[in-house]
Length: 247
Image 1 (cartoon, rainbow, N blue to C red):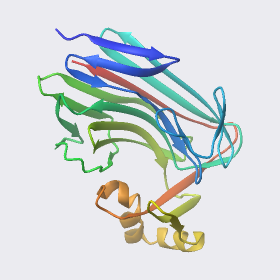
Image 2: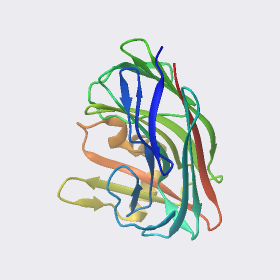
Image 3: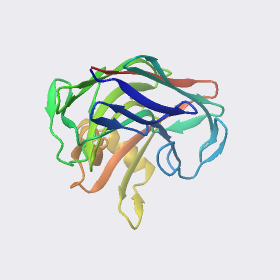
């Protein structure tokens, strides 16, 4: 019988193994318009003092915890607490699994094969599964989400390079405070005027087409998309709690 083995340091999962399935590191992410907070990649335009992060638009206190509470169960939770009024794109719990020993994923009752599509399969669901080559199953459930009345919870399943990536994610709900309509490439990023972006956002077909377009379409699509932002007021918080079970 497989047994879950993990390395957890400073409340962050660094590496894990369940039978022939390996995973990690796990972490958190959030963004305003110019800054990117992450524990597993390179942060951009941020400064950190312990659990207080200074983004381009203001300060966030971020409290993050990972616990192996049962033999084959992991719990993750994060709270993004605004110390200043701040416009945010999202708040995220991030889980990464090596693809080698995983046969397919399942989200919103759809079976997904790994093709390196880099599509963000965003769904307002509370469960994602990964099925191993040797019949082991990983079930990720979104147990609790609080969006301060301005953000809605999603799960996504993404097949990228040699990884499966699962995010529990809080994203702005309508009416949004700001829309960032951008085209990005490796050389530069071009942004549409904010008034034009807001105007297009008010047109329902345009909103549906442009909302996180590149993320939804995958790596072969140009980096064109509309990214909404909502204001988290000083004293408000975003929270996410997730359970990951290994069977």
